[in-house]
Amino acid sequence: MPDSPANPEFEPTPYPEDFDGSAEEISEELVAELEQPVPTAAELAEPAISFRHVSISFDGRSILEDVSFSVDRGQTLCILGRSGVGKSVALRMLMGFLKPDSGSIHLEGQEITGLDEEGMRAIRKRVTMVFQNGALFDSLSVRENVAFPLRERGGLAEDQIQQLVDRLIGLVGAEDAVEAYPASLSTGRKRAVAIARALASQPEVVLYDEPTTMVDPIIARRLGGIIQRLKQQLGFTSIVVTHDMRFAERLADKVLFLDEGKARFFGPLKAFLASSDPHIKQFLVLDAYTLPME
Image 1 (cartoon, rainbow, N blue to C red):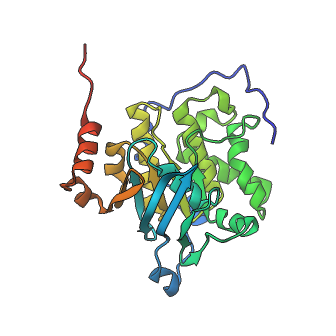
Image 2 (cartoon, one colour):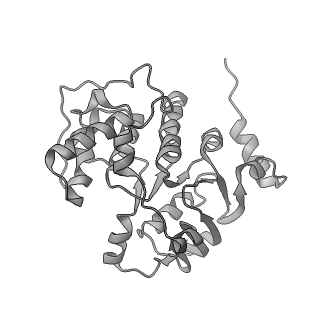
């Protein structure tokens, strides 16, 4: 879809001062519309997502090497590590944008690595990704961006679409920007709107690619509150790629720590924080370090 210039008359607006991502409850109506299907016994026996001995390289350089992990239904996995260790690559393989050189990727027991593009389109109806840049359509307003997947899916009357759009936009605290265009929004606001649009596709799994990069701590906390609330009240399975340990501590059930292409750690958050592995300890020390004030 071609982009068009943003509305030049729109002035960027901040989040409402009293908006906290964890402060508001999701309405019962929205829960009913977005709630996950009841899993079968066979589905409960399988992790929602599993990577089994996955490796991938670019131009002869190993990015991920024999990486295995799993995420159960309703859990949040945080993938941690320094820049360039393959954190976002894992998400792109799950979406089918990249194919592993070896190993397999499973969604609730279904092996998806060998699926063609048509097969992956069906998977992308169940798994959605919130990209680091938001990936919003510049030529569409916030309202139209969030409505887009609802119209693509079909089955709803226009008044139903608009009601759901209003609820989703309210969920992420962007009611004051419904007619704004993406170019006039802050980085944090774009990501919040991208979350609302991701939810509109009614996914089973939500992937977040570095949601707190280039946003201040207050906005990062609000985004974390939104993601946490989605997990607690709607039961979404999610994977969050981040380098921000404080953000991960708020969200993670499990942690995957990548270092030099390898899974240095996979397990519960508490065990990660208590690890004696020197690579993990160094990562935690550097994450906690703050520059001295003048």
